[in-house]
Image (tube, rainbow, N blue to C red; front, side, top):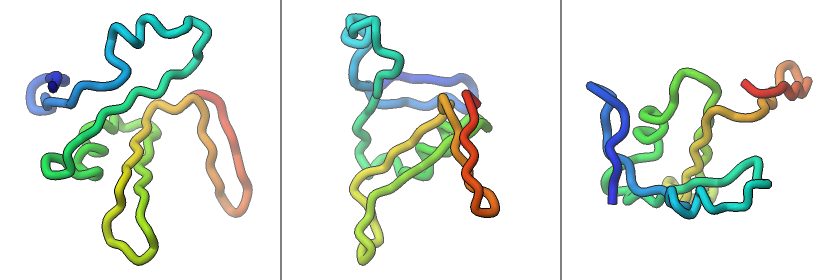
Length: 99
């Protein structure tokens, strides 16, 4: 099952996310964050192409799992619109509030 998001030239289909809308709405109200995920066939999308579609110019990341001797990873994690940012410049760690 897919959902079409975006508009015009940036419109694309995305797989159904989990938890679904109903389950998401019924979660304990005390949660500040909820992980939402979707499984995507690697035949149809690459981590880089998904990342390029989801990024919106703000802070974002793409992490991929791979063994040191393998070219391809099994999992990719994409994140955007973070609650906090951590950066290292000249050996100094800085953590700032919401982006």
